[in-house]
Image (cartoon, rainbow, N blue to C red):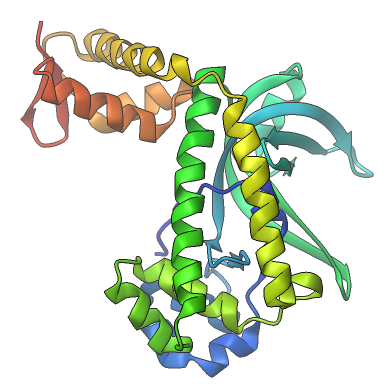
Length: 309
């Protein structure tokens, strides 16, 4: 059974520039993919159930994504009117999102939601190529929830940190004299994760169309993306982040008491209920770690959380 791929965080501008992995890359580096665990499953689509990956210009391998932004538009499309199309905006641009009959929860959400509103969504990356040189990327929604501005701000900050980390590793790769597997090994020795090291090596080996196919084009893209991220960060009300963190801790503690009382509650159940209320798993983990360190809850046994009453 194939494991579910981790949902990646990236800005809309980088996502729009992502493209499918080219089959010849897998053929050129068979041993390379042998060192990247489950990524080998995507090689040449050898397994019909294997995850399909897109790759960003800076080496992020994308199967699923986690996005938080402003839902600005929702429309019903398709001949049978059974497909929803939505637009979710972040500081760098917009994600195009779809949900159809095989995503009933997301479809119901789009049917009932009133835009504009802050939303958090997870889904699978999709690509549509109607003709050579014409590529459209989108997200097939799996789950969508209404959230508040503080959560959107936190996502932007976290996404910025991850993007800058990726850019730093990519810049290091450009300054090296390595390529392929040797480049991946070099990056890993310098603290880059195996998956990102693999992705950067593939990105540099890929044939990118247009300006992204040149060093000057990559530099221009990086500069432009950096500018819009900086503008987006400057517009956030980051003073509310500390209060938001306290609010999440209070929410987590009250939910623990509500679900388990003095007996405790299984983490899986706690997570399921909290996520259904629009709180991300990442924020819940952070809130729980903080509660544990503060001595406000503890684990009487593995997988069970009990509040200190």
